[in-house]
Amino acid sequence: MKNQLIPFLFLLFGSFLEAKVELSKLFADKMILQRETLAPVWGWGNPGERVTVTSSWGESAFATTNAKGKWLLKIQTPAVTKEPQTLEIFGGNPMDSKITLKDILVGDVWIASGQSNMEFRQHQSLNYEHEDLDYPNIRTFNLNLVASDIPQERISLNHSWIGSSKRDAHNFSAVALYFARRIYKETGVPIGILSCSWGGKAIEKFIPAAGFGRFPELKEIRDLVAVIDPSTSLGENAYAKSMEAFEVWLPIAKAAIAVGDYPLPAPKMPTMLGSWKTREATRIYNGMIHSLTPFAVKGAIWYQGEANMGNDIGLYPVKKRALIETWRELFSGGDFPFYFVQLAGFQKSKNDPEGGDGFATMREAQLRCLEIQNTGMAVAVDIGNPYDIHPKNKQDVGFRLAQIALHRDYNKEIVRSGPLFESMEPRGHELILSFQNVGKGLMAAKKSGLNTPVPQNSNQLEHFAISASDQVWHWAEAKIVGNQVVVSAKEVQNPVAVRFAFTATPENFNFYNKDGLPASPFKTDNWELR
Image: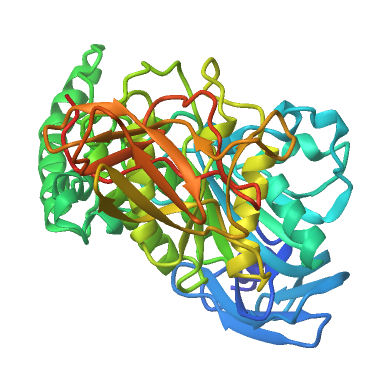
């Protein structure tokens, strides 16, 4: 009996020795935690283990792992902390496991996501070698490119938090770094970036499955996504059919192997792979972003839209709302701010007053996304490149995103963006246009490279077109009068609609406010393009 107990006791105590608490890879040395919040901390261990987290700022919390071995607790974070802090994590039964995280800062954490223009690295940006980059209190955590049909709780491969320096800036999204740099320089708040972008991908891939279920317009995608989710009736039925097919296949496969033959391929489980209707919806969220939830964040910045050009562009604002609302629910940030970039100029314009070519329709769809609560838009149409979908001036993009955040989230008394169309008043053969975000006033100006726009010796604006009710468009004369713009064309006696910069790359763009921020392209009509 004694000899029989030895292996049992070895296994029993061996399991205690192996019961090491594990953290999500987000929680590591050099991390930045969101300030003044109950910040979630989580990981894994054996079921029923107690985990305690203590901090150098005097707060502590504990949790017990659930039946699946996962634990999650929330620890109160202080105000801004630039001095390195520590977290200690104790786990196991008894508490025989300890992890110490060092050089932790407490500040603001922003998600940076989207397509390749957000993924675009700092060392690819214009005049990158001359930039001031030594900001150890700005740090990034970059996700590997992983797509999945199933939400992944664990971050794949090894990751680390990286600080900004001449040596390491190439690891940063250029837009995110220039955004963070301006905020840090003006506020002194340490900034963390959760970087999770993937070039050439449609917005559907970034949306959690739950996002498609709340909008009737997205029902077709919702049903296709539900097929791979066994918790839905559609998914349960799909898996049942797959299992029935597998049970039929299994004895046939065994019989084939028994006589030395190759078995037929096994039936596949339900999948969305290759579905053009969903654009492989949810797969980037599942593979990358889900593993970040419910990390506490300040907000998100987003640069995406090129991959959604097409016949369903009218649904883009609905999809953007689905993304924003579900991200806000899944991250511990409440109704956090979501700021995005309107697409830059790309491709030569067709020089037609009707417009609608290139990214014009996507910019209009993005403009409508401002109807979503607590959002902001950085205009980039003036800093694009007709020959390059990846314009290198990312400094102005980051600066303009930071302009919105500084105004709305850091209480800076600055105008949040360039002029946005507000209203139109017909007056004889003229249209009188009023704008939001006039700031210090309107101006005609020219921008070159990274320089601030230089005012012109004129109040004449480019790229305005007007139409009467016949829907025939004509180039218009547009001039600044006070804080309004007056437009007219000799061919149009009774104008009813106006379009501004509604084209691929509006050359000689010159409409700014005196704060140096460009006006957004817009149109006042809802007519179909010819």
